[in-house]
Image (cartoon, rainbow, N blue to C red; front, side):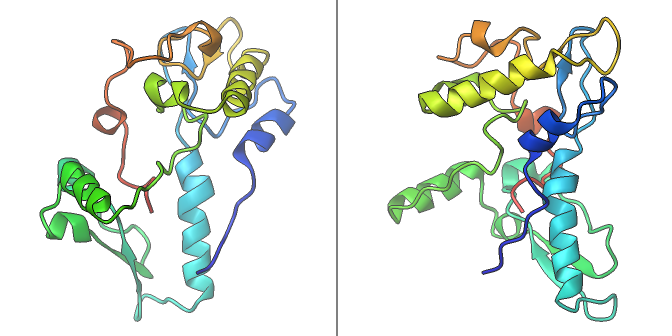
Length: 192
């Protein structure tokens, strides 16, 4: 098992004092747009690509990347854009849905936490509501912080898809404004 890191996203967001800062995480904005999602690329994909390259993968002898997306996310299957890596999708090859996977894990007494950061803007309200009080306060603090420095004058930024401060959002259930993140955004790469 190797552990690799590109750093701490939250600390980098807070440390970047430029008012015009383009955040690596995709914040929602009061003008109903969303920032570019760069966190998966910067903190997961590039880290893996560098490690695989360091381990000796080449275009003639590529590494195989097993991508853990299920049959419900088949639209997210993509070939690798990196010549020294090739993607395989074992859950899709086995025709397993997310529900199949959850059942198999439960049968074996296992659970797998979501790979998303606790402050991911694509995290549903219900999941945020299950965080322990310290984690929830961390997320609230980041949400409060991003409104102090808008990338565009007059535009307010939020971690909530509802475009209001998380402290004012009902975290007991999914919001009607909060469609399934996999349907609108997932490229099938967070779970690598």
